[in-house]
Image 1 (spheres, rainbow, N blue to C red):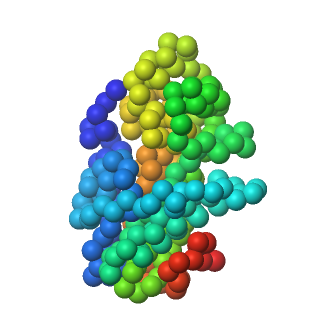
Image 2 (cartoon, rainbow, N blue to C red; image 1 turned 180 degrees about the horizontal axis):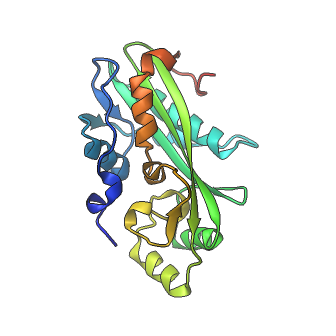
Length: 224
């Protein structure tokens, strides 16, 4: 396993000028999202959204709809707690054979998830929300990356489960863990698989004042 800091995905990440004079806030306790922002050169603070922001799945909700809603709710949660700030929130899941695969509850759940993904193509979706408290505006978008996991041998599966690197990761795997059994298909965003699509985030920041919509703090659903 390669240390995250040495991976090519942490190099030459895009960085946009912030659209407002507010301090940047990452509404996530994910060390991986923090590493991506740091590697891109952003100056930010971290405020973790409450657990309630990630509860409840709507009936017949798709993976893109769910991550968009969760990202919005995380940003909205922090927006009620600060006087000013440009908030970045995100939520990531994997999807395979119609199943939405979030973070595993335990090792047995991680094993079940990895056996489902083994040898199959699947998608990783990240919802991103950028919210300006000062301007009462936000924009929400979803990025999809298609992956292929090679067929895992029993030894590969056992080694990864024993490593505990699956903890806290959507789909029970981390691309940044240096696994050579994961392949991004096409020109999909690698940083999206890690948990924050840096290319799209840069575009959202650059065009924020043109594409963001007015929001009302307290709403549980993203605009649009």
